[in-house]
Image (cartoon, rainbow, N blue to C red; front, side, top):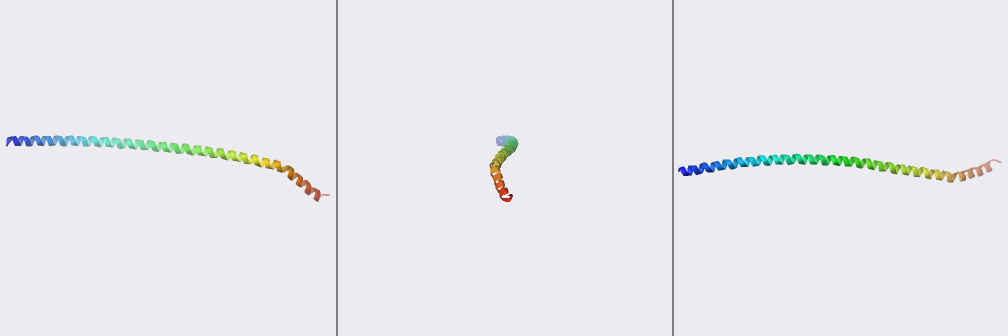
Length: 105
């Protein structure tokens, strides 16, 4: 009977030790999980910041490209308008002279 009580006591102590170790393992796992979640949040924030920076840079580059294309198109249109005006000036002057010859004696 004494031997069985000793065995029961030994088993109870082992069970308590296992429960204590299990609780320590649970706490350690929870701490690691919390650390991993915090690291994931930091990584996500860094990725979002990088994305915002890339979007901003892309918008700026796009706006710069559009402004450059618009300026080139405006310059080309002005040059073409000037060329047309220059080419048409003698024809217009000739037409005006013809009208004036007919109207004025």
